[in-house]
Structure formats: C-alpha cells, structure tokens
Amino acid sequence: MGGIPIDRSIKNNLVNKIVEKFINKEEYIFLVAPEGTRSKTKYWKAGFYYIAKSVNVPIVLGFIDYATKTLGFNKSFFPSEKLEDDLNLLKDFYASKTGLHPEKYGEPKFQQK
Image (cartoon, rainbow, N blue to C red):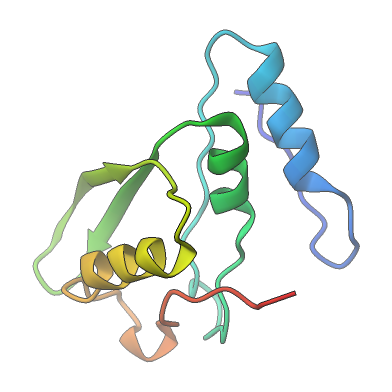
C-alpha cells in the first residue's frame, strides 16, 4: 500500500519527504492517525497541515465518534493564510465528536517554533 514507517524519536525531515512524494506522483493519498490514540497530547503534530499547504491539497476531516457509534469523512478545506482560522475550524469540527477515551483528547493547536 506504500506505507511510510515513522520513527518519532528522531528528526527525519518527514514533511519534505511527503511533499516530494506528492509532487512526483499523479495521485497520492496521505492519511494521518488522530492525536490522543495513545495518550493525551498538549499539541497536535502540524506536519499534515504544512504538507497540505505546501502542495495545495485539501485536508479532509475524518472522525470516529464513539458516543454516536458513527464514523466517516465530512468537511474538507484548503489551508488558508490564517493558521488561527484553520485551527478554529478544526476545533469546531471535532468539538462535537467523542472518542473512546475522551480524557485523551487534545484540543487542536500547534506548538509555535
């Protein structure tokens, strides 16, 4: 399927590698697992956002809502020039979704470099 293993313990320039794959392929699908699947995080990883912005592709928001026993894809958007607006869109979308372990949910925000 073309999966790319990721070693999160080292810096590996992954965003640039994924951007290269998008540029060199006619069709490419990139899926990122949700935050909070193992433990609560203070910040979301921002790579998916910067990849989408670099190659001008939409971010499609998917969900598994444990409370309603539903899953799917809903909104999509292209990253804008206003990061704060895009983060608010993420917050609004996921505010109504409940994971299996809601105590592990980390509000969408990126660590400022």
